[in-house]
Length: 258
Image 1: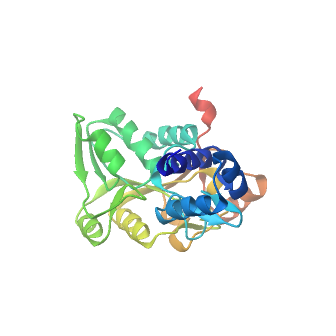
Image 2: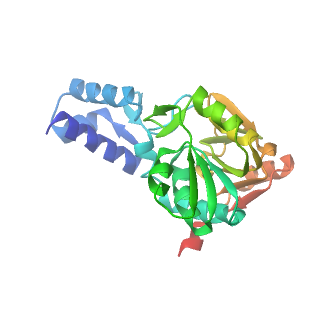
């Protein structure tokens, strides 16, 4: 098996199980542990995974988020349920902002149901999907392209956002703890904050599995959002904490998809 094929197989295993074991990989591909080490080094350098003792994982850490190509293959039903709940906040004729991320990419595709719309986004997946759709005025934000996030980021993106205004911004996050939403990348944080500053209303989208986790940078206070949507009911203790903080969660159950 060629190196590229082996590394793709490792990625596929990570999508299925989130973690891989060094010894198991060496046995599976009949190669040395050193060869697997080099494969994992290559994939870590590309931002696909993070190495841990004895293997690797795609679970988010305080300074790590897996590559867009990984995330777009995970939790599709949860993303669909949250997106369906989110578009209920949109009316034809609105100007809508959609940020980076695989969750936002699913939402972006659904927005065609609400056309005519003006859509402002730095999400390359949304740009590609909607660029030829009638009834969608697409404002594609430029900037420095990030393959890891499949989005445009940086000063150019932020300056463009400061000169635009939207009715609502949909912001996704990989981590929520207490009253705060977090992200591990400072460029992404600045772009999300710029979208929030340029929108009348703000909606936060977060997978329930990411609640109770932090990341390197505080992105926003949950009180800054008009709506917070997640995909599944939380444990009682976690829900009670949100209630104490006065944060209302909207639950978009995947059962609605059946």
